Amino acid sequence: MNYDVIVVGGGHAGVEASLAAARMGQKTLLVSMLAENVGATSCNPAVGGLAKGHLVRELDALGGEMGLITDEAGIQFRILNNTKGPAVRGTRAQIDMDQYRVIARNIVLNTPNLELLQETVDDLLMEGDSVVGVRTSLLNEFSAKKVILTTGTFLRGVVHVGEITQEAGRFGEFAANKLSISLMDAGLTIGRLKTGTCPRIDSSSIDFSVMEEQPGDELPTPFSFRTDRAKFKENKQQLPCYITYTNIDTHEIIEKNFYRAPLFTGQIEGVGPRYCPSIEDKINRFRDKERHHLFIEPQTMDNTECYINGMSTSLPPDVQQAMVHSIKGMENAKIVRYGYAIEYDYVDPTELTHSLETKKVKNLYLAGQINGTTGYEEAAAQGLMAGINAALSLQEKEPLILGRDEAYIGVLIDDLVTKGTKEPYRMFTSRAEYRLLLREESADMRLSKYGHALGLISDEEHAAVEKKIAQIKEGVALINATDYTPNKEFIAFLESIGEERISDKVNAQQIIARKSFTLDKLAKLLPELAKFDDYIQEQILVEAKYARYVEKQQDDIEKMKQNLHIKIPANFDFASVRGFSKEVIDKLEKFQPPTLQAASQISGITPAAIEILHIYIKMSEKKQQAS
Image 1 (tube, helix red, strand yellow):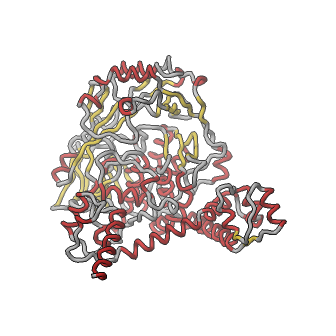
Image 2: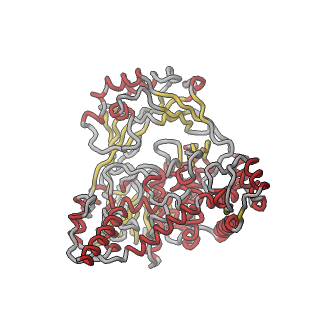
Image 3: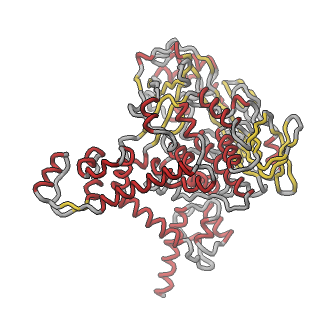
């Protein structure tokens, strides 16, 4: 009954947290209501996407499991935004939901130092301001040096289908009603959020012939850097998705039943996700739109059941039937499970430090939807970091805190603990100030050193990353050492590959940086690079194309780090700074930070606010010098 780490909840955050802690040598207990639902994908049958794909790649680079499981259970792989720059591309995979869950459960059951218990946690066991264990609904008590809560939507969860409500953490599963009280008793601030899911359809009742087919990439890209890319591309079987649309009839059916929608009747109190609204919310907010995309996604390789991405709803069953049947290709569709909304408790994430330990309760860590996020990927990223930091604390080592310039995971956690959230938080590339440094394909080069130091990345895996880094550096060095002059021969060569001529001596990097320059052209320009495989050549191309921009971002980061040591003058008038919100002014006036570094560590003070403050300090100094 005694453990180093107890993880409560077996979703994506719980899986990553428990695996990380156990693999770092800690005796770990994962408490989940049902073993068969460990790693369950409760909502859509997909992993990754824009910015979310970055999180999965970073997880993988640190030694997490999500990327590897996705590569094994994936049934379609696509690079989103493939025609745009590499900083905003995102890998997304449709997964076999059943296979994903089975793989995750089996990994948990076969990991040394990790035990699985099927119970419900009702209470935290406390000694003063420290958590020392948990008590279950069966009155079993388990002691632990660290406790990580990854409760998903189960804290006082309530499911809504039309006027009908049920206490549930997920459709058909009991809610965890008592643990919220224990958290409130510990002094943590609790809020209420809402999310939802769509109807599931019997695939045999759908007419796919009238829909737009959306196949996977011809040469699929795996998520994990540890997956054999050549074998993956050769052997991975893929299924298509399909696109159809809502129409005026669909919208009319929904509008006529707004009065029965829990979202509008006051039945739902929690705040829903702004960027993934229910279909009734979309119709209400975007009345000028004549149609909305619906993505019909297979849930398993057998394709017996489909998910209607874009039709999350909590409308009554009869309305769901009518609106589904109004869709082209689904006139005779059979609903096998109705969509529903779910409300649940979450903890204000400003209650946390950057290690994800709570400030008020020592040795208690929170990860996933309990911190106000939405999405498998955001949850898994937090779970991994909570597991790592709990283990590091037990080893009496400093926590692993990733900077905003190091990882999307760093952006995610910093946003949560400094800004908080009043709605389900979702990761976007726009949230990262240093997107060019945080590209998907560079995640292993940025982060595997940490995973290796933690013992989560093997020597062999780390050596492969080191080899990749060395090859890319060699290729980029060759480019930087190569110059061209505008002689007839070279101008003719440029014209032969469809590139504009040059009029002065230029470095190879200047030519490669052109928007029109491709991987095929690189092989012709510098045949010496042929000794590297296609993947490495592609990375060399990206590094060369964006070298100047990356250099500028790195300079900006160094300047910012140096500037953080700048002193804030005594009695500085924070209220005089234009662009500051009242909240920022109130916090700065309350804490009176002596330096920009100290100001940056105040909850809610963003990097942008620090930049503005720095400008005003310099202006203030100039005024004093002038007088």
